[in-house]
Image (cartoon, rainbow, N blue to C red):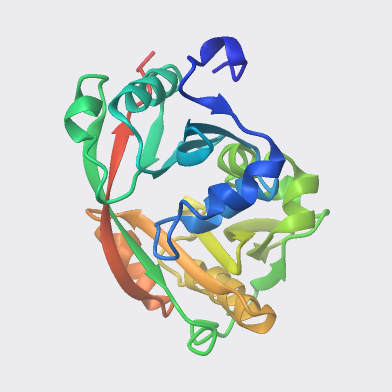
Length: 266
């Protein structure tokens, strides 16, 4: 997708960094996936922001990331909704998170988007860390550093979110389980706004051994140590993912709707 001004009509204006404090105010503390939002505004992960203004008042914004996750904050007009959906339709797959009160579902359907449900979990810093488990031999657990980063399993997804190894290591953190020098399970966290939102991945030959819980447990324990609140989300119908997250010690906060656009099949 091109991010040039030429692709944007007059209602949505590409934002500069000076607008970040005003943009942050459009997102309530209970907004889903808030670590993503703050990370884009703080330039910790790649992303773009477009603003809709009424006079001098900032009315709404569209935030896109280089991952499927994109966000609308504020009270967007129907005209700007159409602009946003036109922009997003050009770059599937998309998972668009919107304010609960924003009436967008019917308009989005005309652009090929479907409504689905996700669930968010979190833990306070006082509750965190109880998922840290004993590591069975011959496995070992390690923080992902410059040496281990090239060995991560979830490489396309991680680079799509974080942009580069340098950005990942400077602003964020992750932990992994290693066997014979190779990563077999990993958990990666987006860090921003006092939150760490994490996802995990385990090699198919090493699943159902509790290794995902070990990687996420180490990440959650580290979050506790540095004062971050851990967040995780997943599709509501993914029972196994829900089970892994709750087993890691996170509590269910709420369900929320998203608008999804699948990638075209080749």
